[in-house]
Length: 263
Length: 175
Image 1 (cartoon, chains in turn brown, cyan):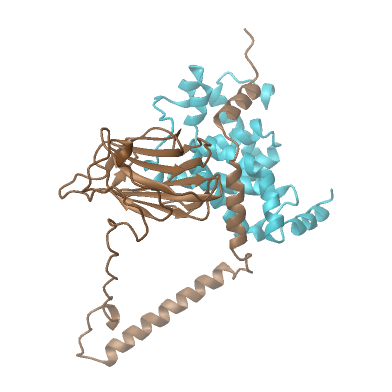
Image 2: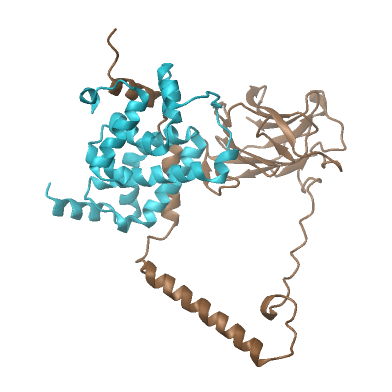
């Protein structure tokens, strides 16, 4: 039997295994390039290396001269007599109580609502809640499923976990551009407004094998994309067709974080 | 087009972000396809192409080869970025959308009729060579520019890589 020419076979295979660029990639690159100054005339590399070497030699020489000039003096704490580093600023207070004007958000203490009557009201401000990780916990809570669907009057986004929902924050923003964690690259989703969902103490790597870029294209919720899963901090960006109020709450059996976006 | 004219055209085309991004967008699809072939992960491919685009913007003064040179120059940056991504430590913890569990060499995969798996087993340079020559239909001298080797070396790389996929390859058939 005559075999197909390799060129044809390879062309079909490459077509199948590669993907064209997402339109958002071009606009992201466009934004990045426009936000940076045009490349300036470069200093010749050799000159830069020589300048750096001279600087190192000069600094080393000054340090040596300083030590010899002051015999018997103990070097103060900190390298080269520099002051000790100042302690870092205290950590911001842990989220837990809703901001003023924010509707009650079910947290760790409140039992999980299991009926529509107990659901919190909608709010357009940042909402947070969830349980603080118990002492001796073995690590981030694994994510088992993520989904989005239309419900009566709302578009719903759900993160399902195999343990209690840890502390979370749902923060509205005026654009659909999110920063990827940890790469720092920016990613733009469909829509004109966004919600950033951050879960502290959850991880989808190794437990969630579904899509990390959901495009339900609902009335308000257009796209949901995982923008971070690093060191126990899970971040999803939601692209909305317009700024909309929402409610975030926890359900149990199975444990899940639910975000309802008002249509 | 005479080379001098081509150089001038490139110079005009690449001055300013608008002109640069216009050039870039013309090759973005091909660059992204190359990155997905090498990295087999859409997110990683997007990151690699984005990083390559920013490097190209910063280093556009290094572009040589006239108006037609942008494509091969940018593809070579993308291929290099993908190579570095595969070598980098983060590559080992990136989750693959479709975990490749096939064991065996490219030759074994090709013999089993699974060309896709066989290509995945090749190194980035071989993947780049085959992709540019067979899929993008670039002439051998442009493949060589992407790979940053001589045309003769590019030709032998394409042939060797193709032979790993089809050991009974007749050089006159496709090369």
